[in-house]
Image 1 (cartoon, rainbow, N blue to C red):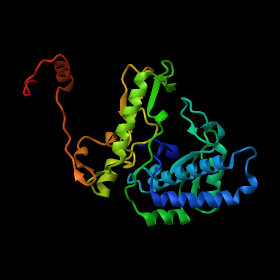
Image 2: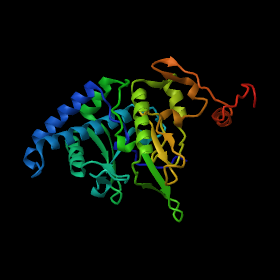
Image 3: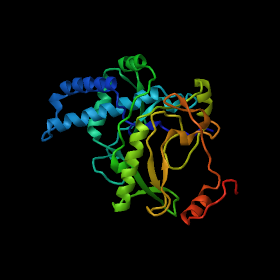
Image 4: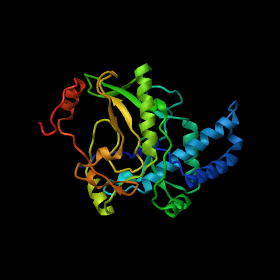
Length: 304
């Protein structure tokens, strides 16, 4: 049975770095700002406000474009994005919470403006949780259809979001986020992640499969317990995040968020990088061989 979910939260999606999409987002934000001049906030730096609004437009449009091209049709929720409308779901502080980082008032105002222009279709959410679902309609939907489903580079994940520390409440068994404490080791790991992700962002990772095959793959939920949304094949999710799930940064620290980590092993052989076939190599007994190598002891390649 498919688990209900309001849809992928809009800020979970990567921000696309495409000239056409950027220009369209800027044109919409310009129209929005001109119409909202009379309701501008006192004491807010106009340039700062404009930059924040442009960023929100680009984030929302990126999420809508990605969801509109989602191949996971068996999951009806995949065609929608979720945007919280309650103030408590947002924060403007770089803290350890799982809230949306950004302005609540700007985000809701932009959503309402897009609705007024018939560019969004809405399914109002639960009054308590405040999540509503949206998908592109009208001129925005036509714009996405004109673009088609193409590969686009993505903007880098913010450095402070590259390493996540979580722990579990032993009584409730619920996971919660722990503040990340900066150390020389952590800064070195962040540098490495930025280097890895810079390489990944330069390439297109896809599957040499038909749309029907892709829909079959995404027909079943795969909950890894760390991503709070249904599994789907999102070809734009190529950057990695390191997650420590035991409350400390000296235990574990696996890498997550690459879309290829969520597909069955027999599907990975169909992965293409920039249109070229790939080979997956499984190094049998890797851990033992690394231990032998660390001691300078040679181990025969055929040894089990």
